Length: 156
Image (cartoon, rainbow, N blue to C red; front, side):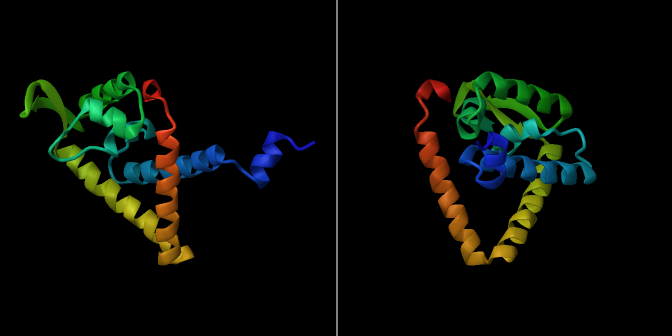
């Protein structure tokens, strides 16, 4: 009888593959960020940092975009605010709401992370060919969105 470990070594399921890819990309991204002066960031911060916009984003939108619970996103925003990467400002379209907006350090981190991710993607595109990589990304986006659509609203 084959063990789960053996099966996942030779024929990993979608969850195992997605996890391996996520953790490998996070390790490279955050270790490179640390080398470039952002050594106070942790992979968990990616749930907020990956979805920040220079003009700001509401915490509820960060939660939806990242698939993380609102409470978790709130804690991450608190951490990033204390580290100097984001600040909460009033939303000009609704003064009762707050936007999470990157600071100058946050904007610098965003530019650096974008460049690192572009390098990672370029490396893979060169390895398997640009057309194949573009097809892979389109299919991965489709599978990801299809899977997310199967979540119940209270699972978000």
